[in-house]
Length: 122
Length: 122
Image 1 (spheres, one colour):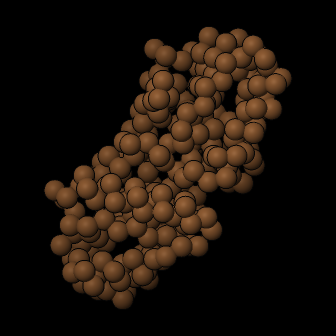
Image 2 (tube, each protein chain N blue to C red; image 1 turned 90 degrees about the vertical axis):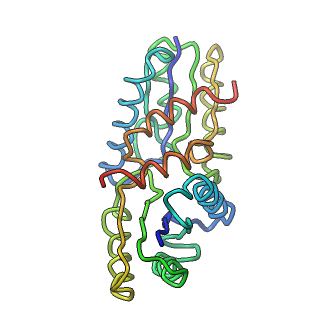
């Protein structure tokens, strides 16, 4: 069983966290050929935390987790905090394979998406 | 003359601001059919500010500016701070047409990009 864990920063503003959960829901709808579920998690300020998110994946029966960081830049959160949290979680779940992907802001297609966004709603 | 202004939050970490400038450079390279230039600007913590960015566009000869907010969620920055800064700038440049687009995190194709990101580098 393969689960995608979408990690966002988390916000004090609950509507922002809900927006991430909605993106995760849409991502789950289009990615069912590859992932059994998509679960959102948050580095801070919102639930579930990264380690709690991994627990949820494990309890759901995951053998593989692909982690996509929903961050625009490769700051300390992406370079240090997320990997550290994943290492902690991996120790708790030694059988689980965790595959960490690059942050979304570094994706080659991001400029294309921004270009598309400049056209919308005209 | 039509310029795209890519507005990011801005960071104390200069490498993050450089990452935004690099995205703007790539966006300029693929969008030349529509935009004469792409200029990055920052809400805070980095230069140019939004109003300085609009000044740069105006000095470059822009008649139209399309603004794309490089933000993942529609928080106060997107809903209030960016429009307020644009209103201030518009007052200084009454001939300029400023077209504000939705934040990138709300784009319908973002889940598709996240799905793509889950595959990369395997």
